[in-house]
Length: 514
Image (cartoon, rainbow, N blue to C red; front, side):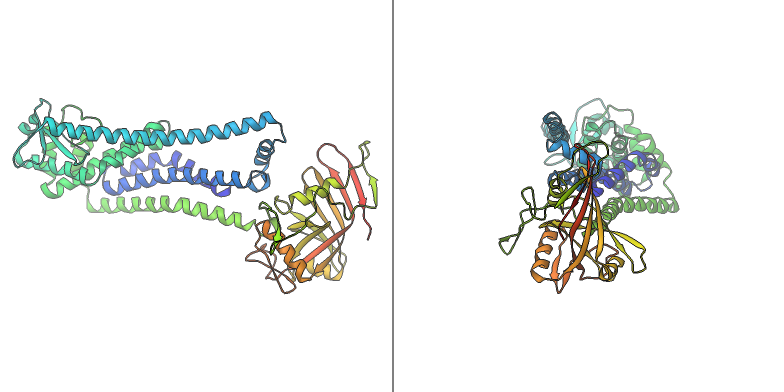
C-alpha cells in the first residue's frame, strides 16, 4: 500500500512541476538527442508509476480484501466492511460497481492508446504506399517525386520508409541543399522518430488535460527535428541546411503523421543553425539534462524502496497481518479456538456497566481474538512490573490459541527480565468492537511440540518463525526485540475486562479458574 501511495505522489509531483522547468532546459535545443531522452524518461516514469501503483493496489485489495488493517487505515477498513457486506448489500454492490468502473476506465485508456498507435501506423503505411504508386523516380535521387505546386519535402514510415519531395521543392533547391534535406529525412527514418512521436502524441490525445503529456509531445516533436538537423549538418554544414530551410519555408503543411524539414519549429531551428551554441553552453546543458535523467530514473526506484523498507519495518512479529489459511503441521490439523470453543470459560461474570446495558458474553471478545489473530493488524500491550515496583509496558504481536494468549519477547528485553522475576502481567488490546484487558501470569513455553505448533501459527500470519532450541527464531523481528532466538510466553487469563465500542454496548468483567 505504501509503495502505491508513494508512487502516486511521485507521479503527481512530476506531472505538475516538471513541464515548465524541463521546457526551459530543452527550449534552445543545445543537446536535442539528450533532450528527447529526458522528456521520454519523465513521461515514461509517470506512466510506469501509474501502472505499478495500480498493480500494487490491485494486489493489496485482492490479497487483503477482508483485512482492512493491512491495507491502510480507517478508509480501507470502511471499504472492507462494505465489500464483505457488513454495511449492507446496497453499499457492497456500489463498491463493486465502482471498482469495475475503475478497471473499465483503465482498460479504455489502454484501448485508446493502442487504437491511436494502430491507426497512425496504418495511415503512414498507406501514405507511403500511395506515394510510391503516384510519384515518379528520378535517377540518382533517393526519394519519390510528386508533381505539385507546393514546396514540400517529408518522409513517412512504412515498409520501406519513403521520402517524398515535390517538383516545386526541386525547383528551389540546389544540389547541396537537396542533399542536406534528404539527409534530414533519412535521419528521421533511421532514428524511428515516427514511432516516438506516435507514442507521445497518443498520450497527449487520450490525456489532453495533463500538461506534462501535451507539452512533452510538442517538445519531443521539435527536438526530433533538431536531431535530424544535426545529422544533416554533420555532412553538409549549417549554412547549407539553413538555406534549404529558408527556401522551403512558407510551403504547404505536411501530411498527418509525416515528418519534414519544415514541419515543426522552423524559426527556432533556423536561429539555432545561424548561431550554434558554444561548447561551454553545450556542456552545461548536457550536464543538467543528465542530472534530470538520473533523478527521474532513480526517483521511482528510491520512492518504492523507501516505502517498501518502511512497510517491512512495521511487519515484524509485533504486527503480524497476513491472511490465515487452514493450519496444519506435517499434514496434521492444528486446532485453534473459534466460535464453538467453550474451553476456559469464565466461572463468574460481573456487569460493570453503569448505564443499564446487559452483561457481555465472553464469546464476544474470545471469538474476535480467535478470528483476528494473527491476520489483523493488532498491537497488544503487555504491562509488567520491575523489581523495584515501577511499571513497564511494551507492544507485542500475539496470537490466541486454545484459550490462551501467546506472545514472544527477546531474552534481554525489559519485559522478559520483569516476567522472569514476576510473571504476573496484563495485556491490553483494542479489538474489533471491544476493548479488552487480560490479567494473569505469563509463563515461558519451552516444549518443542508447542513451539513448533505456535511457529506454524505465526507463519500463517506472515512472520516466518521456526522453533529453535527452547525459543523461536525468524529472519527478522521488531527492531527492539534483540537477537534470536526469542522466548515464547503463554498468558492464561485469570481476569478479563471488556468495554464494548460498538453495539451492543456494555462493560463486563470475567473471572476464570486458576
